[in-house]
Length: 86
Image (tube, rainbow, N blue to C red; front, side, top):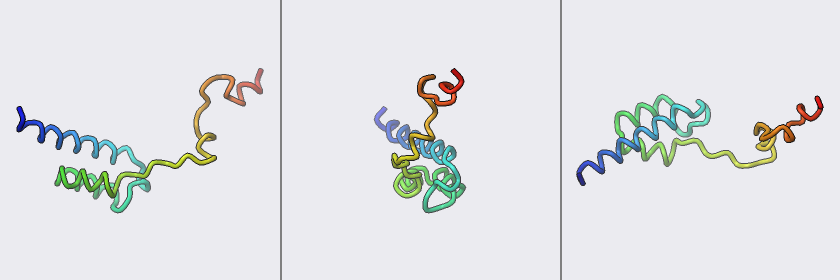
């Protein structure tokens, strides 16, 4: 059972990195093109996964003034268009 734990962790890391990379926008992935990260993570699962997390994963967006405008309304009283139609 102990020898299976590293294998499960490497598989989980590989799946996480692949899903994260494939869902990211093309221009958001850093250092290498998106296809190169996918290839690296698949061919070298442990090294590619760690490298992607450190150098390739898109940076989280910083919460600036434009961030609140892009968020959809949470309720009808937050939606200006809805309030205008009343």
